[in-house]
Amino acid sequence: MSESKLAGQFFDSAIGLLQRVRDEEAANITAAGEAIADTVESGGRLFTFGAGHSSLPAQDVVYRAGGLALMNLLAVPGVVGVDVMPATLGSALERVEGLAGAVLDTSPAQRGDLLVIISLSGRNALPVEMAMNARALGLTVIGLTSVAYTEGTKSRHVSGTFLKDHCDIVLDSKIAVGDAELTCEGVDAPFAPASTVVTSALMQAAVAAAVERLAERGVEPPMLRSGNVDGGHEWNGRVMREYGDRIFYRR
Image 1: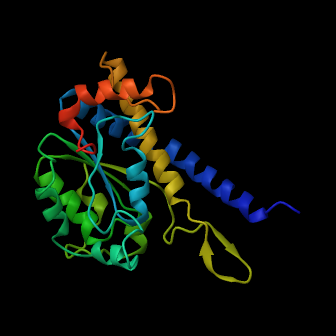
Image 2: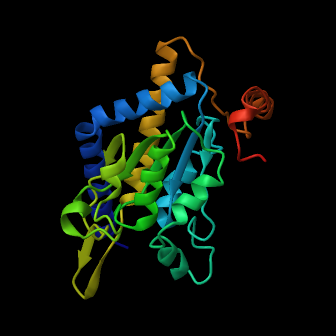
């Protein structure tokens, strides 16, 4: 059986995008890492949010082996994944105005904390209002989005603005409008999205930058170890006891 040309093309596209964000977003990744490190060192808490498939990179840094123990998922019922039925409800909820304010008002997030908001398009009401409300509450907001959508689509928020317009730091994933890297003769729709690969890499890069900054300052970052290596459970138990007032996914 011959090798798939399209599979190879997808890898090439994903690798190209990863190289672009590595080179073009280096300063913003460093700034994001600095902000995360500042929050950890000052006693603040870390939160991450994403709706639909943008929730996957958000979840990837929460309770993660090799990750910061202080990363908490800010979950919005119905929009975190495809387990809601019908799946289209999640997309509809992203357009509901006022939902973000209700979520933040009932969450443990407070002034001095940091929130990473992930939204590929950044055009829906939920991520836009999440950023607006979070900054009003005194949180540092990092937005992870594709700036291309601000030029190729219209905002669905009443203000006409996008997520990137309400963030302290913006990480641009460089994903093209439509999030599909490949086309094929005989297939009418483009396919093979790369946003999850690139966005997850950006999240891990920001965490790596934060760990680097904390180590440079002589602050041991609260990292989690794999539970599948000897001593991992004991290590994690100690970290969670020490930082229990800043960890919310175990309650």
